[in-house]
Image (cartoon, rainbow, N blue to C red):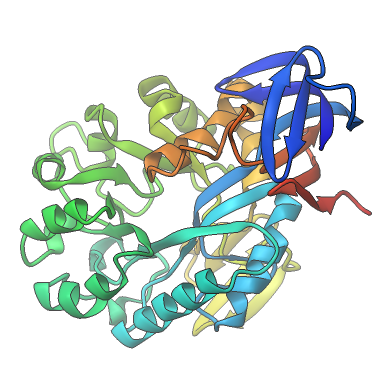
Length: 381
């Protein structure tokens, strides 16, 4: 047993001067005084926060989940450096064979996880998307979601699939949405040309989310409102947002926050593994890429995911989007977990919750990360 002592950020608020007791990988007490006389006390000159949960991340530090089986362990070990203690391994558009291989790799990894961030499941982004809004996804692999694909690709992996990003207007049958929803999969509209009416119909069948809101989707338009408009219009839609200062103008991030609030807005990294890449031109994974600072594009200028990690996304919205720190932390911890129904024992600094903790210094830099009560990252140590 030991204690952390400092200012706690949880439940969308800051609680000053708290003792956080950690015993056997669990938070066992939070209060203004120690619960017991024994146990070492570690002073925190910053903020004690729940560990971050990234529900849309393709890779980090050069690795991508679709590279090979080993990538899962490599990425899991790296993520605590950025305060991330839980994640959904996210795919990219590929062949059906590629998608199955990714799913098999995720299943195998969950059976034998490495020491690092917790893999809570997978997020399939494509190949069932719109060719009009493919973004940097490979158009040659895009296909319609049919019952055959449901039977052969999705149903065998229902236990590990958490989110599927798709274009609802491109499906063979809207009843597929209901089937996925009934089986515990959260369906998100993304890379889509759907109208606001089509999104409304999809919601009736089980759609609950919007993928990287405002990017790669039919826009807000006063006569023909598309998916971006639907994300603002429908109160019950939860919206992912990339907060790298490149994908979305800061005032649009602020607008989304004003409309949706912390309960329906999820900060994501959408990191494609190029966060540590030096500026320059590259050929990776069948694509010509150009890296300039935090910006990664194809050679035609199309954005190709992000090059930031979730901790930097929090810092950005606090400094540039007039969002309070405690609310930004909430949208990167509790909201994503609630979105995938995994917030029962994660994402809060409270007794009975897993001791998955991120410590931020006063400059909002990750100082230490604790997973299951064990320190797995400690600054430059």
